[in-house]
Image (cartoon, rainbow, N blue to C red):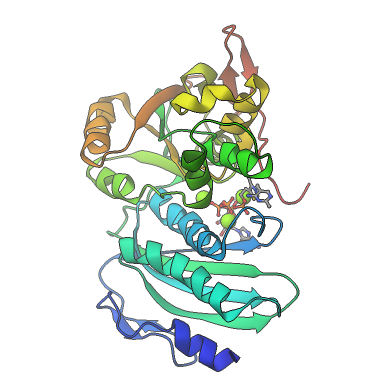
Length: 323
Ligand SMILES: Nc1ncnc2c1ncn2[C@@H]1O[C@H](COP(=O)(O)OP(=O)(O)OP(=O)(O)O)[C@@H](O)[C@H]1O
Ligand SMILES: Cc1ncc(C[n+]2csc(CCOP(=O)(O)O)c2C)c(N)n1
Ligand SMILES: [Mg+2]
Ligand SMILES: [Mg+2]
Ligand SMILES: [Mg+2]
């Protein structure tokens, strides 16, 4: 298939979002601004860095790439609307594989009512996908990493470490419990959109999504909000069968593993009950895992309280691309 037939093959026939004026088919896409704030982000996924053909089918590569981007919109409290895909395609990729990759994206886009409104197609050595997402939030209501305040509760959704556990099982075939569950958590993560959107009824929430591990993301909240944060390691939520993995890896994955695409954030004690109701309504597991310190120090750090009740600095360690 040549470049233009390919673009034609992935072009939507109709658009779900009524604000689209021009989708795929011109020099750029056009959508008409509404009265809301526009939220946009881009993330890139590279073969052998973010995925390998050994552990992900083309469908999963597409699905997870879009999921990671939608997760950033959720972390801003935004409603997903559009995505643009820039793709570098190696010559050896078959048309059917590409179709499946786009099916993976389309599958998740349909769940979130998103339209593919543009992108770019080039050939190159290894598969690389850059996805730009666009969403909306009511004016002034985007959720920031900088909103944490002393005395807040630190919370996290879902369970941590499952994605890296899935990656581990995929790379080390053997006897493991609930393999499919962990495979799915790695290959088809579910961004917490419904939960994040319903938080709109709360007055103040600091929010970040977990792409690089909770230690890293909590450090980002700490830096942006100029507060220190304490995390109880034992309170970090994990799946029931997570105990099957070596203790050292359990700790490594849940704190520093990343790619769980859960949400971590802080909320005032006074709004904790309201947040729990949102979690119930949206079927989202939610757990209190720590707090924002009252300390008056100028140093803004994250501490972990371990099993022996020892409080230690939790370094900003996670998945980082450049050392
Ligand atoms: N190369 C770049 N040029 C301009 N801005 C960048 C670049 N890389 C990152 N940023 C910006 O830096 C901020 C942090 O980006 P980062 O990628 O760490 O967040 P994230 O997308 O939530 O995390 P992750 O990529 O791990 O999922 C964002 O505002 C992002 O737009
Ligand atoms: C083949 C392969 N090797 C390693 C990993 C692990 N991994 C890659 S990127 C990343 C953090 C998020 O990246 P980013 O910060 O770019 O969003 C993690 C944990 C993987 N999934 N596949
Ligand atoms: Mg990014
Ligand atoms: Mg993010
Ligand atoms: Mg990252």
